[in-house]
Image (cartoon, rainbow, N blue to C red; front, side):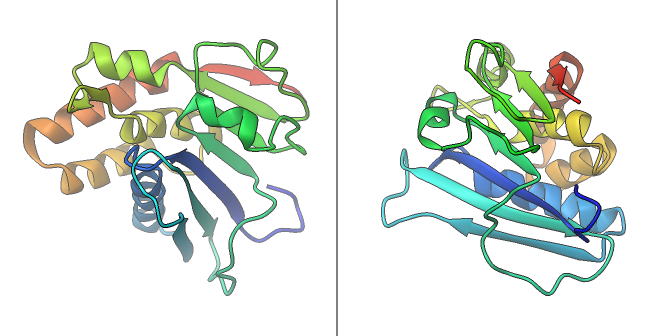
Length: 192
């Protein structure tokens, strides 16, 4: 986060049904549990839902936030679906942090200008751990493990508490386990 900003701005990108909005809400709630005074999250999507590109905007601050507009210059960009990356216009990161579900390296993807990039193969790990819905990998809760590791904004324990509340029982345990695996296996690329 730049020194002159009083809050951290995050954009979550995914396709309808992948849970980008839910992921943003989980981090917002985890931040609130950890004492953040300012937490706002809002979705953005068109008339179409499942499969269409969606975004969620999140702001976090230790002070109250009085701004509720969409995020246009994010400090952190999270991409759940790597097929969206070419269309997002974020090949140059303007010093942001990028968290990406992919098997490729930043060089393979021609990514430049990011301060830090975290890449995790969320899709494969979710499939291996049977974290699926109708045979499709669940991406939103596992990528939270990467978010926690890369940003340090909230702790994994707080995220796990929120996941347990939202998805009780065995379903929640599977989500938490997969997030823990992603937390350990995310590849980090620093460009200071």
